[in-house]
Length: 350
Ligand SMILES: Nc1ncnc2c1ncn2[C@@H]1O[C@H](COP(=O)(O)OP(=O)(O)OP(=O)(O)O)[C@@H](O)[C@H]1O
Ligand SMILES: [Mg+2]
Image (cartoon, rainbow, N blue to C red; front, side, top):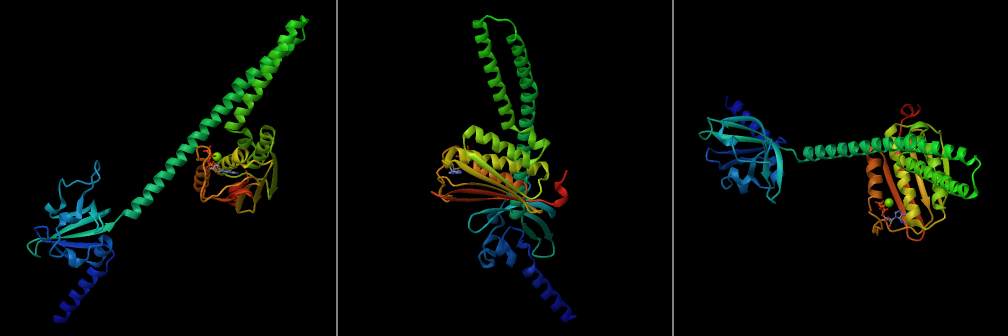
C-alpha cells in the first residue's frame, strides 16, 4: 500500500515536470503555489521566482474574446472549471503570448486550488496569419489577372474591331474620285487610325496576351520578345530547351509576369543592346532565365530607381506557385534573374 502511494506520487511529480504543456497552480487567493518546467520554458519565469511571490494577475493578461484580444471580464478564476479558453500570458521579458488554456478547481487541495494548463499558440497563430496572408495575395493576383483579361479582350474585340471597320471604310472612300486636298486629308486620317489601332492592340497584349491563354507560355514568351525588340530596340534572344508544353494556368501567368518584369527592368536600367532568355523544362522543373550583360547592381544594396516593387512582386508570385527567384547581379557585369518552378509531367500537357 505504502509502495503504491509512493509510486503514484512519483508518477504524478514526473508527469507534472515532464508534460509539454505549462502547468500553473494558484491558491484560492490567486497566489502562485506551483509551476512546472514547461511553464518556466514558456514564460521565462523560474518556479522559485513565482511560487509564493507571484500573483495570477501578474502573469495573466486577460482572456481573449471574439471582439477583443484580451479582457478581464468574466475571469476564469472565479469559476470552478473552464474546459477551454484563450488567454494572453505575460513573459518575463515583457512579451505577451497567446495560449489555449483550461482551468480546473481542486476543492480538496488548499481549500480550492486552481490548476491552469497552458499551451503556447504563437507558432500556430503565426502560421495561420501567414496562410491567411498568402490566400489574400493569391485572391488579389487572381482578381487582377481576371480584370486584365476582361479589359484586354474588350479592347481587342470592341475598340479594336471598330477601328478596323473604320479603316476599311476610309479605304473605300479613298478609292473614290476625290480632289487632291481631300485625298491628302484622308491619307492623314487613315494613318492616324492605323496608328491608334496598333496602340490599342499593343495595350491589349500588354494587359494580357491572348497567346498566353490560347497557346501557352513558350509562344507567349517568344511573342513578347518580338514586340520588345521592336519597342525598345534591344535584341531579345529566346532559347527553349525541352518540350513546349502547357502548364497550370497560374504557373503560366506567374512565370510570364516575372519574365515581363525582368525584361522591363533590363530595358529601364541595364543599358544594354541584348538580353538572353532561356526557358528550360527538365520534366519536373521549369526554369526561366533572363540574362543581360548590362550595368548590373549590388543586390545587397539596391538603389531603387522606380517604385521598387518589381523584385518583391517576382518573389511573391513565385512563392505562390511553390517556386523561387534567384537574382545574381554584379555591378559592371550584368544581371541574371532565374525563376524555377516545380512542375509535374501529368499536370502539364493540355
Ligand atoms: N536588369 C537590371 N539592370 C540594372 N539594374 C537593375 C536591373 N533590374 C533591377 N535593377 C535595379 O534594381 C532596382 C529594383 O528593381 P525593381 O524591379 O524591384 O524596382 P523598380 O523597377 O525600380 O520599380 P518597379 O518595378 O516597381 O516599377 C531598380 O530600381 C534598379 O536600380
Ligand atoms: Mg522593376
